[in-house]
Image (cartoon, rainbow, N blue to C red; front, side, top):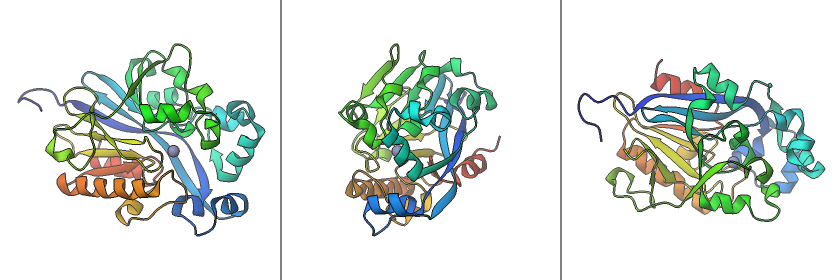
Length: 292
Ligand SMILES: [Zn+2]
C-alpha cells in the first residue's frame, strides 16, 4: 500500500465529543420487556454516555466519520425535532449534557483542525446524533450509504430518529454509495467495501444491524495499529465480544452477524482497536493506541 520513504497515509486519528448523556439500562443492555414499556416506565439510567465523532488527518485531506450531535437538539428541541411527540420520546430516551461548544466546528478546533479544511465526511448511518451541524460542512463531500438515504427520505422517517430537515440541505454535496466487491484478503469476512481515498488506508465496511445501512470505517497506515470505528453497531466493545444484544436495533440477526464479522477481522488483524461511538472507554482506548 505504501512505498518506502513515503509519508504515512494517515497522520492522526482524533475523537471529538459533542456532549454526553444518559440512556436507560434497558436501551443499552437489552430487556425482556416490550420496548414501549421500558421507554415509558424505566427509571434506570446509564450515565456519562459520550456522543463521539472522529477526525482522520489523511495526507490528501481531512476526513470525518460522522459529525455527532447539534447542540440545538438540547437547547431548542421543539424546533430541532419539529414535533412535540418527538420531544416527548427524546426526553424519555435521553438526558443530555450538551454545551453550545459541543458542535463539530468547535470540537475540531480543539483538535487543531479547521472545519473549513474538512474534505470528506463519511456517515456511519443517518441518525440525528451522527449528523449534527451538517450546515457547517457544506463545502465538503458528504458520503452516505444509499440504504441510509432511503431510510432518511421515507415517510415518517423522524419516528426512527432520521431528521431529514437537518441532513438533506440545499447546497449539500451528497455522494451515496453501495458497497463494491472487495479483493482485499483481510476484509474477506465482509460483503464488499468502499475505498474512500483510493489507497486502502480508509475502508468502509458493511456492518448492518443497528440500522440496515450502517457501516464501519477501517483505518490502516504505517506506524499505527489498525483501527475500526464501528459507530453504533455495538454500544460497548465488551458487548460485541460477548454477543450481547442491546435493547434497540433494526435487525438483531444482522447485528449478530456483523458482530461475528468484526470479531473475525480482529483475528485477521492482530492488535485491531475497535471503537464504538457511545462507549465510555473509546477516548481512552484511542489515546492509548495513538499517544500524542
Ligand atoms: Zn444510531
